[in-house]
Image (tube, rainbow, N blue to C red; front, top):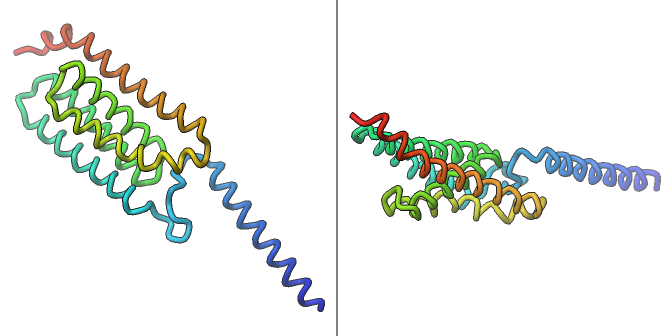
Length: 178
């Protein structure tokens, strides 16, 4: 009978310890919590979206840098570098990487809508937004208000960057003309 009491107490302490570790891990807040607890890795569809963004971003960077050196291509390459950096951070389970990809994707969307780039800017925007859409439910499960604020902040930063370049480009491009 004494052994039964000890076993129950031990099980209760073990469950409390697991719950405390889970709360601590969620309170850290700097990692995406959409990975499988047993396997400690991101789900396959989320990892695949990060890899897709990385592949597309590197393709755009190489294409822009292999071009004629126009300053507009360099700006496009830097926005694509934001996508690649965000995808790399996302693969390391960093939430800020998803925000950086969302900001770069919104900048590509606004630039395409304002006619500053070719139509494939919309494809870049859709590809860069995909990881946020796939991780949004995991972030919202943790804190829906912070997720909404996170998305609004990232989208606003991308919008601001695109509008700033739209206003500054007529002044900056002639300075670098050959």
